Amino acid sequence: MQNLETTYLGLPIKNPIVVGSSGLAATIGGIKKLASAGAAAIVLKSVFEEEIKAEAEQTIGQQLGADENNLEFYDYYDYQVKNEVLENYVSLIKEAKESVDIPIIASINCSSSSEWVSFANKIESAGADAIELNIFKLPFGIKDDAAELEKVYFDIVRKVKDCLSIPVGIKLAPYFTNLGSVINRLSHSGVDGLVLFNRFTSVDYDIENDQVITGKVYSSADDYVNSLRWISISSADAGCDLVASTGVQDYRSLVKMLMAGAASVEVVSAIYKEGPEVIGAMLSELQAWMERRSFTGINDFKGRLSQGKSSNPEVFERVQFMRYFSGHKH
Ligand SMILES: Cc1cc2nc3c(=O)[nH]c(=O)nc-3n(C[C@H](O)[C@H](O)[C@H](O)COP(=O)(O)O)c2cc1C
Image (cartoon, rainbow, N blue to C red; front, side):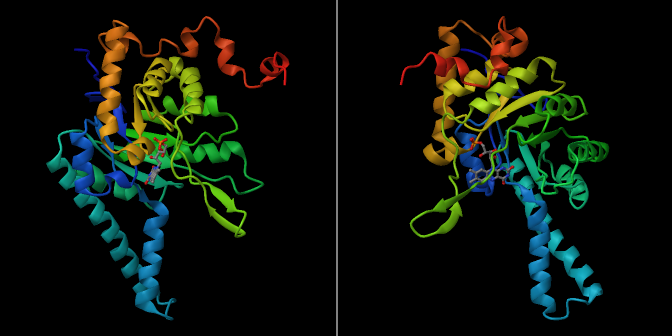
């Protein structure tokens, strides 16, 4: 029997499959199903910085009606509502910890280093094994400087690491002007892991009804390639665990991410599409593949195909199709 143990944000886990943050882990029922399906750890549905603000504003609006300028009331309700969101989340963490015996990771979706930092302490006291921060600052400002946008990430890391003792991970989007450098610098900034990458909701058009609609919610099985490239490029010099996210839907992409140097992977869309049983299927196929290849543990092949170990490192940096098209007849 192969040993599938590995790590996630430096935490030891029994196998490389972590359930990524989503509505799959918003209830105790969902969490129990994922745990009994074989998940090594579960990231809870995120508390959204905007959600906390929006809910506060809505409730305050209802309670105060036209009297929005009554700042004393505003402060009172603001505090109450934020507390409610947090209390529900804290209860979910506590109940999850009592119900399953795998690491439970809290998730905060944020774009600034204020508002939610005080929540992080309560999340830690509730028993969360780690916190994953889904940070994204959309570069709306046409005069914004890339270095200033990047600084927000480092400020958040510093602030959160200063007040927590549990591991902290950051889930990143791939949209940086200098992605390789940001990954490398963040990995050495004191965080315990980087999750590469988050996938956003997209906008699409219904061309028969002239409507703007939400794009495809779930990733496809070949969407893993961007994460694969950047994990391959980054893993040799990374200062923390790299965790692959987006498009990991079968044992093949799972194996590829580990060979690129990921310590573990996060899976969401595959579970929505196929049910929690997909976790067990991926794990038994991983076992069979390792047996076939005579690998006894994850470290036997982790990073084996990373750019750092490649005899042909340029292949990871090739992005244009020049050779492909020049050799093809149409
Ligand atoms: C329905 C749905 C809900 C999600 N909710 C969250 C969330 O609350 N917080 C978060 O950080 N990511 C959320 N995500 C993003 C996933 O955690 C994951 O990063 C993304 O779906 C890519 O992984 P996948 O290809 O395995 O789906 C959600 C994704 C889906 C499909």
